[in-house]
Length: 429
Image (cartoon, rainbow, N blue to C red; front, side, top):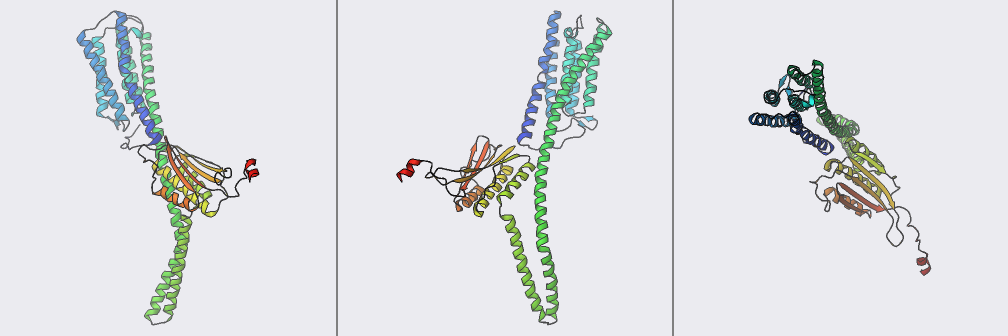
């Protein structure tokens, strides 16, 4: 990561969940350092060597301090880069100094290699674990070439110490250093891949917001264009005729009154046209609203599925259902962290005597926020929908089911009621 990230902003839904999961996972990954350091203790027990109590205590304190600085580096790296240009931030300087201190303490306190492979080398194990943990913390928000360089240094230090011990061939020591380097790169690469995933989710979340804002801006431009086309010409004519009427009035020409009458006529026609445009935007068509719901929800990053066909309803009933779709989609975008939504159109035919047949439209979405108020009373939007549906003989139900919100509107279905399937009722009649 080459540049500083901007100040972290609150994120919702999937982006926030992925960041939280990755952050906690990396914290747990860093906390493995003290446990991996126990391999050095196991090597000491196999060699039958016990370091001094003071040296062992100092090494333990340094390892715990190093782990804490690794946690601090990971925490800082989630919000901004760990390097300002070529200058490391204070937490990086402290981490590097702590790494050097652990390596020096390991050389001073732990015995030299007495034979065997890397598993019997307490110095190499301690330095390798400490270096891998440091590289993993730096990999959160540093250029990876710096992490690779640090891994090379760690592997080289282990190899040099084993060569200086002089108990095995140089080639074996170099191989041991290479093993430490591979382990270090695995640690750092795992962290780097996790941060790459977080960065991808962040960019997708930002793109979702941009797409929603672009959709709103496009709709505003469309309305502005239509208003300009409808009203612009009429207002230009009004301005010209007003100037002409004023000039005629100054000369006492009676034709000025005729021009003002034409201005009034133009103004009235323009007013009717504006009302027509506004009525076109305020009226709701069910098929159009379903298409608009797909577009808006997909622009907002919500997967949407529409099930069922648009029914052949009377205009008032179809408009009422269209308003349900519009209000439901608005609530999904504004008041939830939805990732998926579904709109169902179902024809509910009931046996005679148990109620008239109905057509139900159901809008379901996930991502209900914990802070969202209960839908029992409903907001102004739901109250308005209930009034619209009641005017056409319908009803509205809204309820939360776990993390899902279900909005169901019912209107009388077109066509005659189905025949009674019970022959005894017909015989009795």
